[in-house]
Image (cartoon, rainbow, N blue to C red):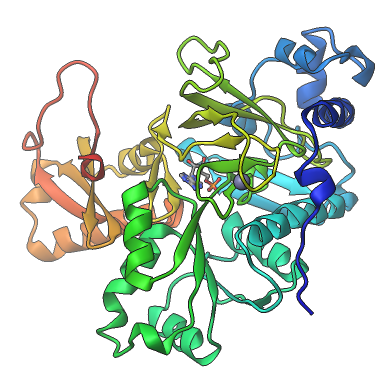
Length: 435
Ligand code: AMP
Ligand code: ZN
């Protein structure tokens, strides 16, 4: 049987019905939001004390934006809308300066997210004939589990192999004739370069397509991966605050990503003025959850820059599309799919008395992967120590950073005064990937 998960009623809903559906769900979202101490207070400040205070979708615009900082402050439970016993899962990511942000899900939330992921894999043409190797990490990060259940629901055979261990990835791809993978684009480029080294040829595999996401990548990068593996690669966008992957996904036409507008109310704003940007213009994506119970989020500022493509799509889906993510309106770095705020690294360095105050974070490409180097000054006493001590210090810095932000930087120690002195606002990050 050729099962396809295609919810045509909702995926091709007409604009007017969609608006009504959104309004109904927005009211329900307000109902849940009012159950949280955080939103109860915030909504009261704009005189919303009941879902009935929302009469039209534009009433949403009275509500202040929610930010990542808000999510840090509400930790752990001030934004939870349901009794704890109704929560079946949480996902968490580290925010700035070590604070954790957490999103809770009820079973209904998980089922709805699963449905979005099922729509996404079906939208890129997968069926129950596909063998799906999920190369995104399983765990608190949403990339692994997010796609997992959706792919099962759409009938695919799922291999939950997770990220890393390239040799084993190749073995599974060959032995089980994997047709579809989900990975960060940089990981796909990385494994393509070691395929030959490992003695594999493309003809050993049966790979047909990939979903690439979790990090910014260009159209050229997509084309490169497509030609290296002779496959189709589809862009898939998401963020843990909006469940995770499958907030917006490309269809077979690969022409911008359909946002599931029944589940996420989409706004685009100018990040400087915070005014709504005219449709089609670039700005910051702002989302409101429309179908989530445990952690409703109202007007969440993603910091991701994109634009809306309102044109009808040839695939027939009516949900509007957004362009490939252009960048961010904050300083968050994405290193091989892992989010890192420079302030997190700063905090760690500053806690170590042996280390001076001047530091620099340099990001480069090492082959296909991102490489991060933390350069920091150490005091004259430390620097005159012998090489073994310096090595030990380097390792300690590296380990502390790894423990906190889950990436392993290269660490360079410099004598005090040897790193360039910053005049005015210090530029602590040099991202050479952009040039
Ligand atoms: P996380 O909450 O850890 O899943 O990280 C979410 C962030 O990853 C988003 O806010 C984006 O900055 C980035 N991201 C996810 N998917 C994509 C994509 N397809 N293209 C560009 N950036 C992405
Ligand atoms: Zn389409």
